[in-house]
Image (tube, rainbow, N blue to C red; front, side, top):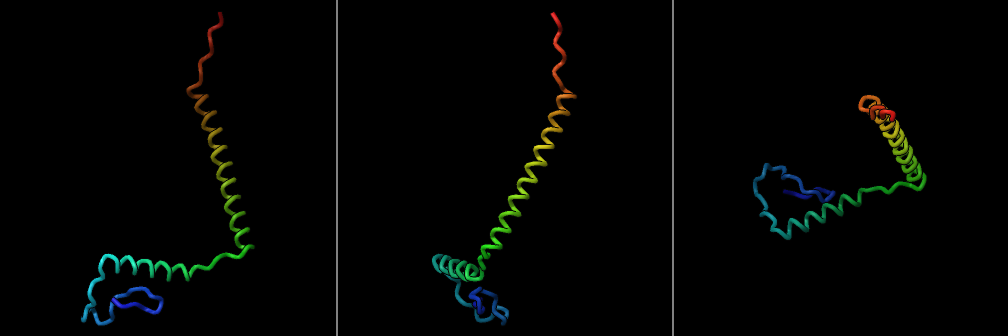
Length: 92
């Protein structure tokens, strides 16, 4: 295994000839954290404008889904009350 420019570990180009020794437990943990940090450096934080736009899109979507679920709940509750409704009470 060889590290490329980004720090990621990739297989050697020579097909594994001249293998490196395997990392121990703590070596693998250190490698994992190095790779996590390398990936986090690639992350780009959204601008304030993008953040507001993304948040509003999510909120509108959630409200739309809530409306659909509420409407379906009303329809199905009305339908079940029609099918399995309480029979009329006998008059005394």
